[in-house]
Length: 322
Image 1 (cartoon, rainbow, N blue to C red):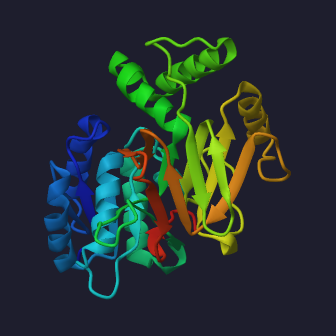
Image 2: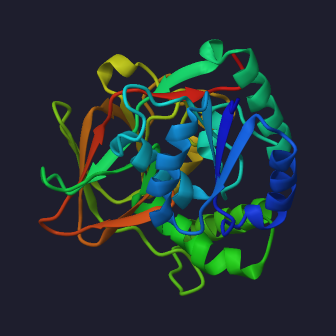
């Protein structure tokens, strides 16, 4: 009997080293049904096939783009009539935020072994509900793209800078992120603009239904439905809205306040100048060529064409720690 269906993308960066071990493990374990795709447009057909084997858990093994495409197809594809099995994500991408939120980290094989153990024993105690972020242009005929973590304003520019300028150097993820952070602080501290440094963020307008709007330049813009924000900060009271927003003014003092508050776990405990925390179920982002990145995929708002975010109904996920 198949307990776990594993969906892998061999072309994701993390799988270049780990996939041979994953294939070997799956070949020797009859509890796992392993399906590989090489392009995200194959994910729909993959999930049709996976639905036929009726697994207890679906595991996504790929980069951020694979996870985002799989979540979109799982929620909107109607492959699992009546019940979508709980979803787990192996630590594979550059950031692994969804995997970390679910308590899945370290060696992917050990994580997969633990998932199989849970699937055999019963998943009920490990199932947690998470809403997804549905991103669209606000028109009813547009099919939304779904994810769980959005970075915008200066943060999107920083992510793109790291992806396009730093990752090609071939450094480890940790060193790449450290080098990016140093470049950001250097540009903020000295006000220097150069091709080898992250660009200045563009003005953006963020509207929350019933809660007003924020207008300005932000070095950090995060919208997420994960349990914790990027800085380890609890996302607060979900009764005010399922999407949690953090916006940090583009200034070194505001970033330093955020850093120290996150170190001492004080973010959200009291009002801090330059740091805005909001929650809502509908968020509009407007600006001239203002970029956002939803789980690794780039989108851009322009004048008259805002990005609209809405939270979905809860989706089941598998958390390793009960």
